[in-house]
Length: 176
Picture 1 (cartoon, rainbow, N blue to C red):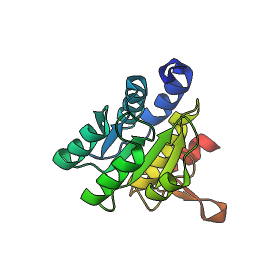
Picture 2: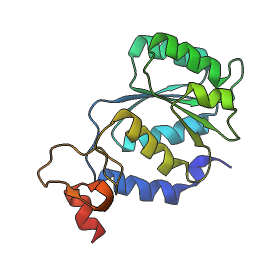
Picture 3: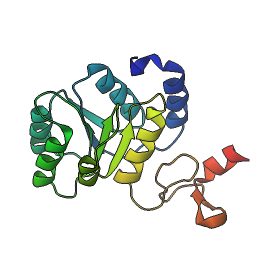
């Protein structure tokens, strides 16, 4: 089932994202042998304001990371010629602190989970989970409990909720 067929989820997510602050100049590299998945990730991430680089193989992805420099990598686990674990190890050798999110249509072996920062399953809820995890890893620190975007100095101050959760001022008004 192609992920792009989930147009309702994508349109809903995109309308929410377009109403929120955009990240500044962050580059995400997506590595996957499935072109439909790459297109899906590109639409989601560009809609959220990220610059997106695409690679359809592990070798191509490692070379792009070397040449272009990236802030985060989305990496498929099972690809021809090179598993995601091998790609992740090569990326870590280049940039040891590079955040890596591994995506897979199946379960992730324990060895793979130890190499990466996060695992996102390829499901019909992938868009929401993926965007939340990308934001969490690229923008550590204060994160809005409503939209998952980073909280920065804004015109409308943030609101502190119970249990130490914080939301953007404009998100607070959407909540009430």
